[in-house]
Image (cartoon, rainbow, N blue to C red; front, side, top):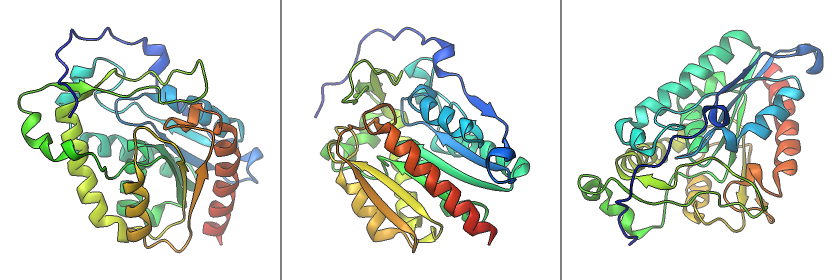
Length: 270
């Protein structure tokens, strides 16, 4: 088990680095249709980890909504005051905006953002064309995870893993610790999501790093066992760690996800 964190509060992050992003569709670039993409960052992270991908999607003509999850982008202590339901509500709010303004919507996410995309697919799949997930996390092999219900009552945070990125010089702008009440909330959300994976029938494209120091193989196993999607493909990234959206395989993720989005939104149109 890791040593409990009892250090001083971390300094607030620069708001500009973690700002949400919202852009309108450019149908002249997408065959005359308005296509929206919901972009979601991960646990303790920020939109900084997804901004290059979001900007690439916007340049291709897609409307983009990239919210900042509650408790993120400020001080890590704020995460211990929010719930899984708060994160789900934020994602649904961004989705509702895209759905109201566009002809089709796809959700993409990293790590817990991928879990939230899967949650959206389970709940609102009839309104989604598909989802793209990168190093999704819906389960863990960590033995100390079973202690979260107790530890969260006495320990505010554990040392975290941030910037698990192979490419030098990249920064996902994440908290340095893992807030335990928030981690417990995430684990409860994961458990419900795993039970609901069979409800997901829409197309799913999953990218998984061969070497990931944050998310382990348990999620891949859960997805293969649980998803009902007939259009489900897992692609392995050989040159990136967990935050692959900022890593060496990012250009591949951007290009292949754009191909997926173009295909599934066209197929949804029929």
